[in-house]
Structures are given as C-alpha cells and as structure tokens.
Image 1: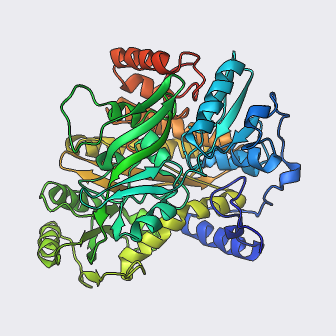
Image 2 (image 1 turned 90 degrees about the horizontal axis):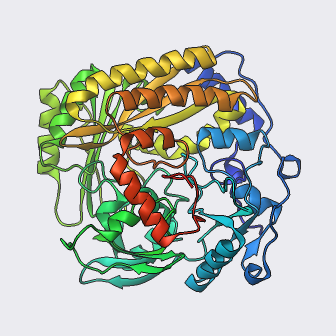
Image 3 (image 1 turned 60 degrees about the vertical axis):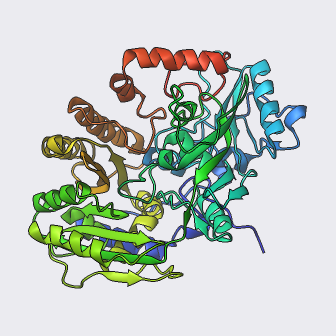
Length: 535
C-alpha cells in the first residue's frame, strides 16, 4: 500500500480533495447561499508543472543523511496554510521554496544544522506542522544570506516521560496532535489542546506561536499548559526548571512562548496533562438577536462557571456551519469533567442564557466516557464543520471563491464599536476587491474582560489575482483592528503577514529588548529572519 501523502499545495491529505462532481455541487451550494455567480471549476496543480527555482545551495555532506532537496519535499515546505499560501500553491507558484529540507533525528543533528547554517550564512526556518496562516514558516532569507532551509522536527514525536503523580508529560516538539494524544491516552491522560489545525500542527509549533486550543475559557492557550521548555539556540541549550510556578524574575518560558523560531528551536517541553473526561454536557442555545447573545456570553464568561466550550455564532456563521437556518444567533456551551457530573453547571448556564432571551428547546446532550462520536445535534454539526473548514478552503479556491479568516481580542466595553467598524471595513474591501461578499463572526474564546472574535470573509476571486484581492481585504481588516485598540492576533501569531500592525502594537522599548535577546542567542541572525523583528 502506498503511504498517504499530504497535499503539496493545500491543506491536509491529498486524497481529501474532491472530484469534479463534488466540486460542482459545492460551487452550486455556495453560489446559492451567498449569491455568487459564474463559479467555474479550475484544475489543481501537478508537481511536475509547478514553478520552482533551482536551489541556491546544495545539501551539505554533513547533513546529507537527514536532509533533502527533492522537489516534493521543497514544495511541501514552501508555504503555510493561509488563503494566500494556498492560492499561490494552486497557481503553481513555488518561488519561495527552501533550498533544502532537514529532518533531524536528534538534538545533535539540530545542532549540526545550526552550526552549518551559521558558517554558510544560510537562514533556517523551523517548520512545525506547516499550518501557519501568517507567513511564519516561509524560508525567506532576505539580503545577506546565501540560501535558506526548512527545519522539520517530525521525526521527534514521542511522549518521552510521564509523571503520573504531578500530572505532567515530557513530549518532543515534533509530535502532532493525534500522535501526542494517542500516546497520552495509553496512560489515561490527555493534554486537551485541540486547535483547528490539530490534525497536523505540532507541540513545538503550538509553543512557538502561543496557539489557542480547546477550552473557550480558563485554559485557552498552550501557555497555560507549559511547565518547562528545552530550546536549542546557536549559542547553546536553554532548559527551564520544572516547577508549578515561580516568582524568580522574568520567566524564560514566557520568552520562548510566542518566539516563532527566532531565538531557538524548541525540542521538547513538559506539559501539564489531565485525566480524560468522563462527563460531558453540551447545549445549543438560540437567540433572536446577536446583541442578546453577546450579553449572555459576557455573563457566562464572568460567572466563574468556566465552560469548556462557549462559542457564539452569528446568524450567517450558524448558516455557514449548518448549525441553524432560521436566522438565529447560536451559542454552543459545553462542560466536561473527569471528576463529577455536570448538571448543576449546565443548569446555571442555561438560566443565564434564558435571562437574555436564549432558548434551548432540545435541552443539553450528554456524552459518556469513551464516546468519541462528537455528540449529536447543532453542537455536533458545528464541530464537524469546524474541523472540515480548512479542507473546504481548498475546494472553494478551486471554484473561484476566496474564503479566509482573521481573529482578535478586545474588552467587552469596546466590542460593539469594534465589531461595527471591522465588519463595515471588510464589506467595503470585499466590494472593491471582489465586487461583493460576506463577513461572518463567531467567538472562539471568551474571558471575564472581553471576547476573542473570529471573522470569516468570503467573496468571488479572479483566477491569478487572488493574492492581491486577499491582501486588500486583509489590510482593511487589520487597519480596523489596530485603529480601535484590538490586538492584531489572539492566537494565530505574527509571522510576516502581521508584522506592520504588530510593530505598532508592541511597546518600543520591548522591541529593543527582543532585538537584544536575539543578538545574545543568535548573533548571526540565521533563525527565521524577518519574523517579529527585522533581520
């Protein structure tokens, strides 16, 4: 049997790209749903027809046993998975391909990579699972570099050690979500960190980008689960001490978290793990207005109930994800525990929703231990559509539809003004760039002091003109966020795409501190140049 392969140009497994009949059906459904006309099927690229420059540097003999300049390897490590990345790949443009890809099998081989790159003036970009949506994994060296290579830690994917007493696990950074969870499950544990990219993204990538995960409240980011980290820098190993908490100066783990590969290569970490949930309750609550649903979610976030799931879907988002078709705004709320039944928590959450006009006619849905079905009803429909969305993006592009997302966070007191300004700016940009389109909103995470709104924009695109159309909409959204004091990203990192707005958001003295830290551990500037700070 042949090995299953990931798509070299788009999201996920290559065999998940639908045939022409299925794509025509998608085009008809999406066109009817959003009033998009003249959608036509376009063929996906073939590996032998893509445009890719010759390597600037050859694979050195010292790295030859675990590095390759093979065409598929270079193509598969060229881009992340933002719409603009998929669009460039779909059109066969692989001009940003790395010169070669290294897949080290040990820390010693990572050290060898960094030493060779420093001597040879080659840039090195940690690849993670390649799911970046902000240009964070492109091997773009810039001036002064002889070449660039991509560093893939996929061979370092083991759960090395489990401390049952302290409930922590030492895990290698190349472990993708499914492999990590499967190994922990053998010991009765789970990390419970499930980003949308879970199928392919890795622990190292989660740490480097401060990824958001499963919990909508309380443990929202990977930050909350990190106990200690081990990072290989060009100037040595930086390993932090395992303790539950410390007040000993600025935290070195906090510097590694969100560093996006510019300070070193995270090779492993100790993570706080949990017993696998035995009780789960989920409910879908419908609201006649978006504003009423926002009020209910705010009260839930401030109640101290800490629901594991608390997703708000506006009417169009609910329609898009097959959750509701009657124009309702929907709030999906859920609780889970390994220790106790959850009815009192759910009863109180539904009482809060009811006080804001929410209705839950079907009541909560219970799932017991070992039930991996995802449940039933509206909540299950949302979960299924949520996990399939990246695959749908491939299909939509192939029929001439641009679909992408952006996310942020703001205080509750600012949300109303922000939401109005952002949706207006994106609609205007879609009109200019695409001749029309739609923008939807959901909350992915909520805090006592504010929500993390997550927006989707959809519009028709011109074959070959997708990057420019996308850039106009993305720029309008980012300017609207920045002008109203919201963050440029809640959990998608900075990369290269968000740099202009990140530069405005961070304090100037902190930028100087970050540059000084990089000079200390990477004086040659070989690690992911252009990300977070200038090379």
